[in-house]
Length: 428
Image (cartoon, rainbow, N blue to C red):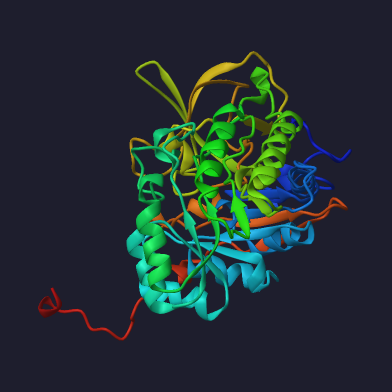
């Protein structure tokens, strides 16, 4: 069996531990998300060691992957967590996170959602003056944080740039005066300020520029408890092409110096936070799929798989690149790579996983491994075309696989419909 494994694995047994892609596919079917616990724990420890500064906390951004089994491991590694919805709060709590370990970074939420967090004594961040006023009405005298937009952003695609002058997020520093008036009006305690410039940077210079801008704003508030510098820490999706990793040592040294100088001018040491999501979970995940059809149309060879955009949306939504591996039980008569476009089984022209890739010759029944799929894979999956969402499996540190989410069933598709409703023309 020709079965390459993900580069950079941390266990001698390889990414798949004591099993193989074909054994996993046989037991759990495909598509299938497979996560490696050892990789996850290593990435957590790398991020925990980013700074020498003692009042430093790492808050995992749960939107990247919210499987409770992974959340529990992340908490075991000493992480706190960011939530973007009551659902994420619910799952984080189920995974063992305490209210004081959860930071609710809200965006255009209703009063009902905001109360959900307040009633559970979870700190809320708001990202507009309007939402700050809503918080004041709900919880006068309460602790709150605000999300600032420093006017700069970064990201691998325009859709993931969350800072700067063309995004919906955060409060402009020009509105600090109005912000202070609302805080005074409702007798609020501004516990902290936060920002997020965007996703997937592998060069820290723009991030550091954004940090400096945020600290200029932070200096205008004399009684902060913490400053959250945001996330967006990238991983190398082009490993086979020699893409280098984000230099955490260099970035950490620069941040330590910036924080040390800012604390000196501020007059006291406060807590500094970061909120990585992708960096912790992306490389711990591989998505397995099966080749079901091969054809050539007008000079393009297509490999048709069960890896539709309902399973992994990133390539269709962000033009995102994931490296692929081919797993086969065959011996290649001609091992020379062939140009192929890998597509899914969804009725969309944009359902393309990988365009014009050089891959070993494919046959029906071969497996494809989509690397670095642990972030924004399952969390963005759907039942589009009434497809069933896949199972998730964790390779434990001892190499054994364990099911951490079952595959959808057909019955799951009708679970939330009102079966007692009698449809008639009058309904429409």
